[in-house]
Each structure stands twice: as C-alpha cells, then as structure tokens.
Image (cartoon, rainbow, N blue to C red; front, top):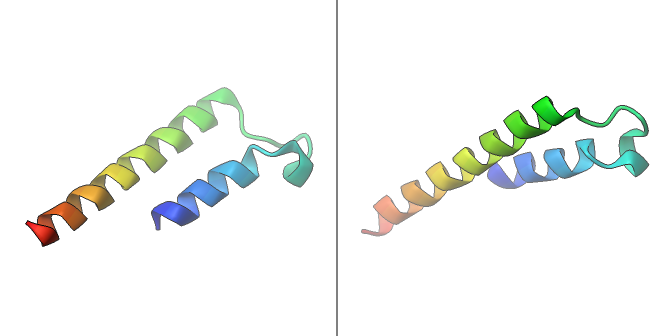
Length: 51
C-alpha cells in the first residue's frame, strides 16, 4: 500500500498528468503526512516481524 500512496501523490501533483487540477497545499500536506505515517507504520511492522 505505501508504494501505491507514493505513486498517487506523485501523479496528483504532476501538471503534466492532471493539468490545472493538481492538489492544493492543504491536500498535499495531508496526503504526504498520510503517506509518511503509512510508510513508518509499515517499517515498524516489518521490524517487529524480524525482531
């Protein structure tokens, strides 16, 4: 899921892909924070499996 969130964030911020309908700063902030938290939680889960 984290790689999909990353791809979605990159695509929705690309003017070449979505034209003038790119994310605003609030949506960007929320999206990137959600992506970062998801990546961190996934990393913590993997570490807990290994430990």
